[in-house]
Amino acid sequence: MKNYTFHFLIVTIVTALLGFTGLEFFGATFVRLMCLFAGIGLMISCLDAIIISRKQRRAKKKPQL
Image (tube, rainbow, N blue to C red; front, side, top):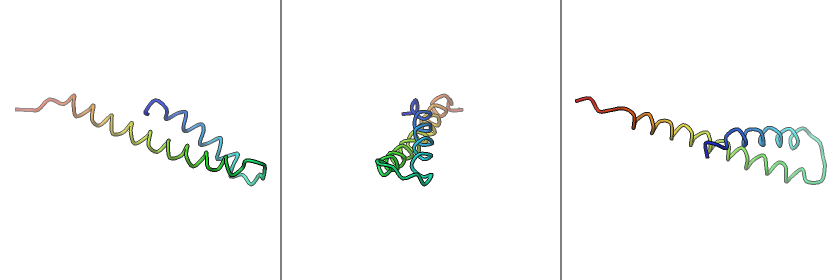
């Protein structure tokens, strides 16, 4: 999921610009929903990157005895 963060960011920005600029066209509701789902995917992807990086840092630490 971490590999898709940039893709979700681009899709979110493009669909937000198309869907929320006030232009009315056929499919505007679909574009707004797509923006919502891409934003959710972006948040999950970012959280996944943070969680994985923390796990890797913990695994690299050796216990001090």
